Image 1 (cartoon, rainbow, N blue to C red):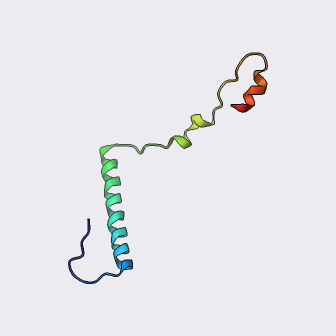
Image 2: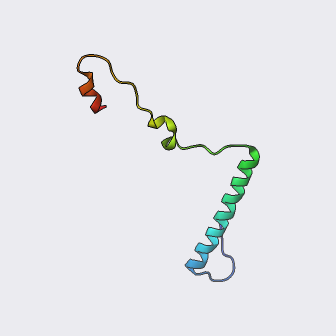
Image 3: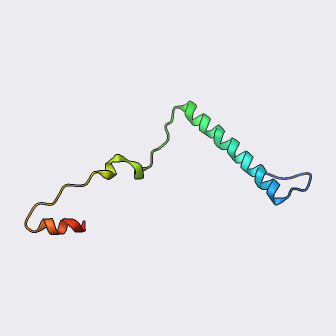
Length: 69
């Protein structure tokens, strides 16, 4: 939490201050995570297994139903 104790900041100046503090905090957290040896969690949306189609169903007339799921 930030508190202005002296002076009169404009909203733009306050936004710039918050952006700088947030960026430094993020950089410090990233460096600490790197030192701890933790890897970044990869999103499942980009996982290669999503590109692999499941097997077809076997049986009479299943080729028609395969188009629906």
